[in-house]
Image (cartoon, rainbow, N blue to C red; front, side, top):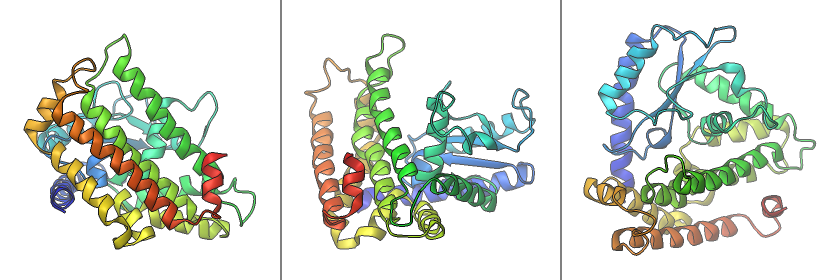
Length: 313
């Protein structure tokens, strides 16, 4: 599957290059996390790199660390594109921010985004062991609220669902909002392919936690989140079950890595784009992708599996 294979090779190459550079230039013990297409191994030369740095407890976040600008320059120089300004990335985050306020008024759009993507698609740029240890603590924080072994990791499941619905609502605001509306077509296509994939990979992962002890739940989730979203589906459902799904996803990656396609999509508006042939082909394939994803889900987990009721009710 050309699109997937080329994206993996490109992403791995850039990550390897950047990790080697940062290992020599960043302070010892400073954790930098990447999310998005590079972390999922789905990047192309047109992709930006989402990242943020984790500051140890007690560090004054109001002060810009001396390594902040060199880190930004290293990423921009080797990848070419930084995250969008004033978003959840390219910033410094206190470690405790990822370990507290799960829900409630202090759990902002940015904090749930960083926490969910740390789990569902995150990877390290520096300090791999520190990255894994913090992810384990986040998982344990969720699983500790599971009342019984027989139950799914409901607390985590509800937050994965909440994040997916937040993405869907925010898409409308960012696309149709009166203040600074953002490019429409690529965002629309990503929502029905890559954004939906990370959501599904979270559901598949949590489904495996039924009838497991808390320790086993944590071990299962840690193992699943060590994999990319595509690899999670392959691991749970098997190569044969996901073959057609992967073909569709490969088409999506192949199209978005084509500069002419991407540039064309960026010119479309909500008024003129919906009947555009290139957009329509991707959009229609996205609908097939959603149906196939649902089919894989229902074939993998029998109707009696508790994940079905948990997702609906």
